[in-house]
Image 1: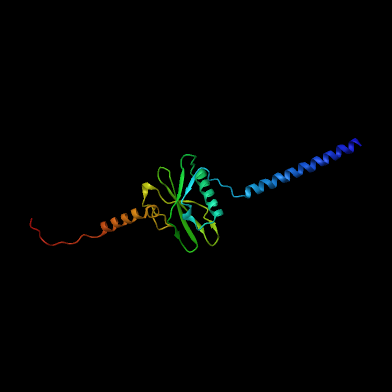
Image 2 (image 1 turned 135 degrees about the vertical axis):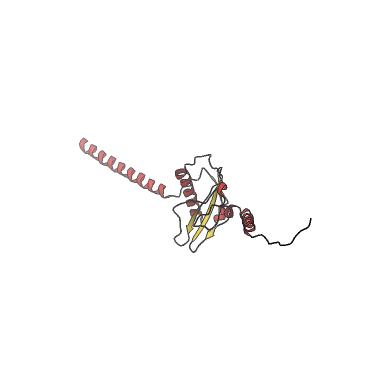
Length: 177
């Protein structure tokens, strides 16, 4: 009798242990499948500039940015406080390129693209210049850092370049002073 009770206790403990393991396994699966917001380091400004994305996609791009900045570029808390989405976007047939500027010391501009057809983001975030090289142009996007971040400065810069490139007038008249 005592041996049967002991065996019954062992069976019940095994079943309870197995149930706990199953609950923990599925609990971790559910927890990992939820969209977690990792963006606690940074404040994101001008989210209305990426209004073509829904709330879940905005959280996804914020997580992608956080992961890229902390893992690939080794930024730590305090290096960047604000990330500002720019109002200029560039659209091709199926893709929308959007840009964000970091408030680091170089005012670095990065961008990514969203594929409307596949409803997913480009796997990599690309650098599009910084304040010290305002005229850098990425082959994928025909616009420079200045065009994306400061359109009026870009317009003034282009006007100056056009003026400098314009040949001078030929003046054959003689002046008596």
